[in-house]
Image (cartoon, rainbow, N blue to C red; front, side, top):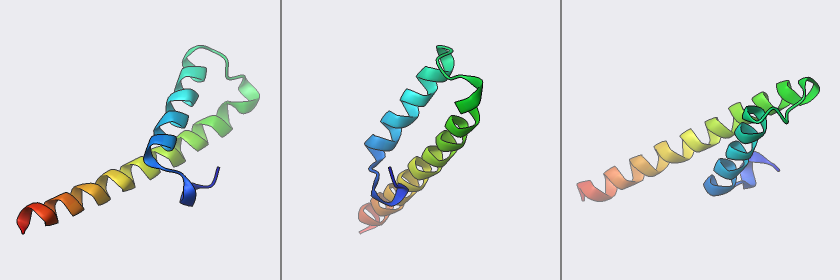
Length: 63
């Protein structure tokens, strides 16, 4: 899934899935690095979306 097309909820769901697989021990050593890398990308996407919405809400409230 490409970052530019993923919604916040999709990113969060995928992040939760990755976390669950790591915590449960399902992630084998061969895929762990890739999953951690993807999780990092998803966290960045979520953070950017949250900051954007926060800025938009502040602008709305100021008016």
